[in-house]
Image 1 (spheres, helix red, strand yellow):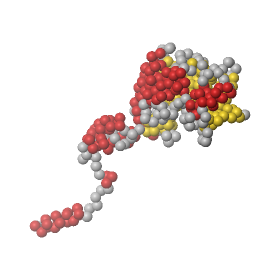
Image 2 (cartoon, rainbow, N blue to C red; image 1 turned 90 degrees about the vertical axis):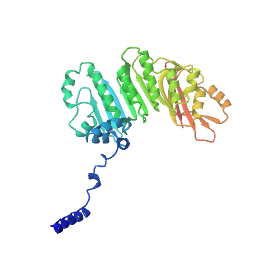
Image 3 (cartoon, rainbow, N blue to C red; image 1 turned 60 degrees about the vertical axis):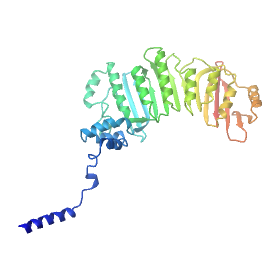
Image 4 (spheres, helix red, strand yellow; image 1 turned 90 degrees about the horizontal axis):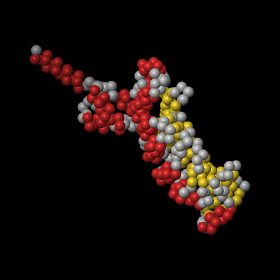
Amino acid sequence: MYQARRNSLLSESLSNLFQTPPPAFQLDHLSSLSDDCLRDVLERLDYNDLDQIAPFGQRLNKLVELTRPKAAKTKVSKLVVHHKTDSDMLGVIIKLASEEKFEINSLDGLTDDPGKQLLFKEFVAVDDVKRKRLEMADASIHKTFLDKASILLRRFDIVNCYFVSITFNEQFLALIKQVTSSKSIAKIYFDECNFENGSAIEERKRLLSIVIAAKPTSIDVNFITDLIFVDEDFIIDYANSVLHPNLKISGTIHPLPLSAALAAALWRFDSLDITRPISNTENMISIIVKRLHLKRTGVWNLNISESIDEVQIDSMLLEHNELTHSDEFYGHVIVIAETMHNVVFTTSSDGHGSFDLNARFL
């Protein structure tokens, strides 16, 4: 009996010795780690990875939620928040860097596409669709939509933001602050937007401060309100907050006086496109020359009160020996000597007592 027991133990030992261990991917490597170690691992993942891990136990789910604020975010090349007034529908369009595009709105639920359901699972449950349609005339639907959109958009790193036909209120301003705080933000675009409370001076100031704080390299504004949305202070603050600012302003006819402070900031812009008329532009040629010395490409389209004539150009040349000027059929050309950097500009009457200035910096 002793011999039989001995043979059994020997056989078991040999079997264990030569047994093939399971593959590494089948082993549980996480449970043995401390919470601090696990959080260090989870912080290296993106939102989609965390979505996959969260269901695997209460401990992991808790750590995932603690980790989300530091998680890597999915790059979004273009975000559009829009409002269709005819159907009172709010919508969000998300275009990923991979060119994949998704759209959600305040009237519809999710499709049967599992990829889309996974992406928007934090946004709305499918069984909400009927309730949404029944209550779509209720203003609270917009609030609910924005609340859920705010949660959804936390997972994205947004490059370009577009706001179309939006009437701004406190909740919209909070959403704009959230999405423009992305570290990759490059452009903010407002098209045919307005404010909920008429003149809304305080709301305008808050929105402008949010935009300045985001530090986008490009701002495009087309407001339908009579209130002057972009003023001198904003242009100066923006010019001083970004290394290569680009600004386009349309939708207002209120003149913008060219003060000494504004003139000292205007030359910093790579590109300018302002349909709003600029008055007191007697010294515009000096601003163009200062912009030329930045030696950066860009295009300016401005509406100015004074034409730039040969007398102004000759006077400027006396102060800048490093510049040469020629009058070509396509416009005035000013070149920095011994370089390829130049500006080509024209001024032409707009038929309303002002002049359209086009300047191309190379």
